[in-house]
Image (cartoon, rainbow, N blue to C red; front, side, top):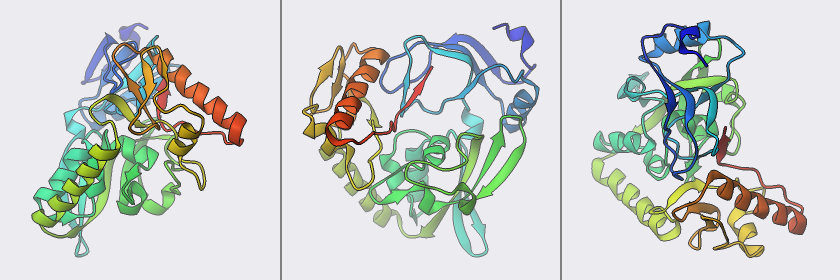
Length: 296
């Protein structure tokens, strides 16, 4: 790919760029693009050749990047898309968060200003853009319950504002995610107090530490829970708790979490999870869906 053939942006192009991935695996991006701001991103999308592959990457918290890296242009939004602020509309309070703002930072911002409703975000790795795209959730909270509206761009650079009902949210999914790049979310909150919110977040943190391998190189849940079942129970039932392949392992602590024990490749992680997926289908006729995204 020749940079000279790409749009003349105000942001940054970086060939053969190293990428963040919580598993600490994977190759580089053929070309990384960091937009300077929303207008820069719109200009890029309006003017790039439609035959060039575009991939969006947030914090790298729920992805496996292939060992061969990512072809085409990979877009990562930076600090201009990480702003967080309080908004009041019609006597209701909201928090406006840019797509690259981390979920934890947004939860802490709400806590520090005495607003409740976003505590569950403290248990979600990654950024707001990805959380909106996958309807992220935990501890009885999820994006679909608190998202008022979101700003998004299509891949031609046109801007849209979508309200909650237009997403048609479902478990770890929505109908818009594949066609749009989310750049901002407006999240509903309620007045509370710092101490009350802090207490809830501390309780969630203790629960996470007791049940998840959060100190390991991991990326959250590997598979979505199928209807009426728990993915970890199915993995456990086929004897894959603690199962290893190369440097990849299903966690002993929570067996729906894959772990890089130190020297795993992306192939190790994908192959181990694929073996579990196949065994579960053979034994239970259940076809598990990946929750982790595989980028290449």
